[in-house]
Length: 370
Image 1 (cartoon, one colour):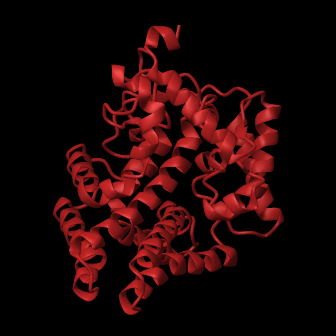
Image 2: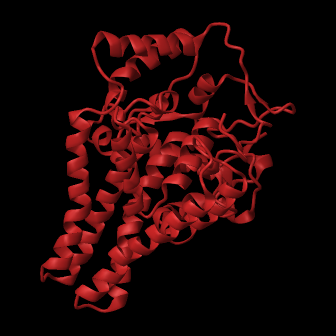
Image 3: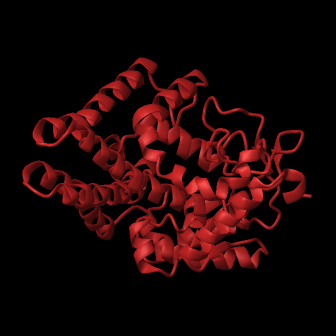
């Protein structure tokens, strides 16, 4: 457990059947027998080139070519798609240390979050520590916290307007990365440094604040100030393009994230009075996580394996390029130990399940949950 994390939550150590020990051994055998590294390979490196090109090429075209303003707006949407692609395929593996066996390359690819409007320190604490350690545990996994506006768990306070959350939530999802760019990073850094949270050794607060401020200034200069200076269009049109880019990326990322944990089958699990979670950490991941569209090659490729969330949560140190293969091992082992392995055959079915679940959570607790 990382320094600063509340010690009031702990996972059960009782696993008499030794599920994780068995699964881990089988997965390790797969890599040994096939002489494979657990990190990324040429497929990931090639995909990185494609994603960065999708993200940055439209930006340079907008700045250098004289084109119709509607075409410029369309290209900002393409940038948003590329932005989500870089986040899911490159930044994500980099900051998990699974992009490459070389630490400097992981650090470089992880740093791509700065041109996506985020911050490495905040992301590693929020995602690697809080989300991966305390998956779907209210009060600890911040992915469940949407403020008062959306109720993601039955343990969260209920308000009358939640009855409509399955209608309005999708419009808010698109604001995810825009919030990163403007407010979220500042709030998170203040909160995380105050709680002394870290992924690894605790960093120097002054250094982290300096990195945050400098990277935000550079980010806003690249994406707002420079286009305003170069392009012969009204300033508010630049802001519309900036919003379109972020809304596209935010919508894609939010939907992918929600389909992993906020669907009908997955559980939100509160600790008992002693602060103990009923299952071991690995088994807990099976109850709180779901896959979707794992046979869809396009979804597999574009989402960076984030549709294989079960595998990712149990083996976050393994690059997503291997998930399709190790999924067979995870699924068979879960079945052998009589444990759940949640998955939706298509993205559409997972999306329907998510919004049905939001609708249920939006009802008065006494009506929705007996």
